[in-house]
Image (cartoon, rainbow, N blue to C red):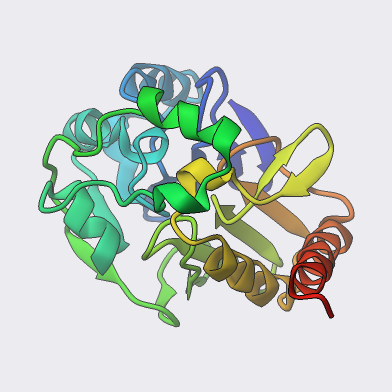
Length: 242
């Protein structure tokens, strides 16, 4: 486990899908769960910091892709924590609908091959205890705001701590090789909508960005996010011939 800042950590060794831990007076909150093998590593790291699985009171989900909820059934069982998610993503978690995929025609040819190796489109059914809505403030981290950021997934959520200017961005973007980018089209349901969400988040001017993929961004966060938003606007104008 690696500490990001006061009372905020990220688990290590999970391979794919970042999982974050928040310490509050009433217990622990985990954001996302990575793949099915991750819960054992998560619990081991909790125990190494002197915490029990039962200290986890909430598991908050940004969206219901397998690399974010694959470990959810086991982690929820092991901790007894409540599961919080948006209404649309909760339907996938409960097994009521498959994971939405982008239309084939929207995916570039090289990436279409990856569609054949993506995980199964339907999850093992799980329980969701609380439906999160855009604009509400959660009793987590001194007031964590829920922000609707659709695009990568239809009902994707991001979370914002305004006093500390910390943004949990989920998969609205990824930070790899020192660069902030949107996720690949093969796993993004609606890229134009996702980029509108990116611009919405850029207006917050975060000091720290925590993505679902890549290391935490603790320096030049706003500058990198603004660059991503501008880059997309420029690409759109070129495509429209403006």
